[in-house]
Length: 242
Image (cartoon, rainbow, N blue to C red; front, side, top):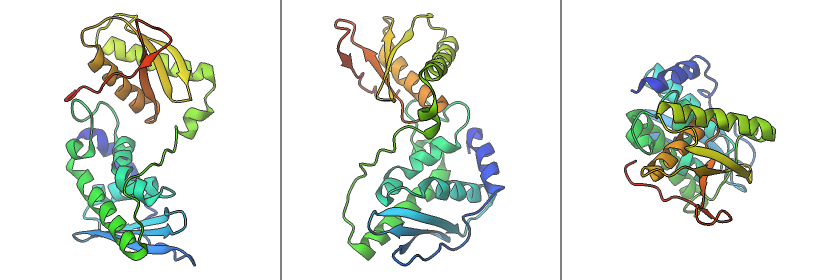
């Protein structure tokens, strides 16, 4: 297991509240996802298709307890389809400290085997919910927006936080001081930068976005101001295998 996950898992395993049976509300649907001896139980509001409460049982060791405790905390109040589609992505981001565990775009499957079981449990729970209710939505359109912490920051606080993150990114990679300069923050989450010419700019831009998402908020997006026409924005294509 990458060392960057261990501290968060130990903290979660030290304060467990989701290892008890879920409550049975009058209108909730109780479904279970299983993988081997481990079970994930969900109480779901069938009107909003939202997870009201989650619990787990059968964890094999202390670190798995930490994984499942964190998972339950993350997915409560999410739509069940969002939990199944992106719950493990949220889990990986929540647990990670320090540098990404693998180069390029981090996915839970590439990051560590500890995320395989949560993925299997969530998909099985969704299948159980479909069987019980006829729920047919195929993909999640849920967008929870940025975190409450980010939304609560004043404009100058946001700019200062971004400047600090960018300065660290530039120093780590020995880039020129003007490699990236923040031009605007739009719609709370879109960060528009002016970038100095660089043959590696697409890769650097995606790396900067990963750093900002890790340090500040996973919902933030990095855009570059179009050089030839400063009134237009273009999103750099994701470079494969970055």
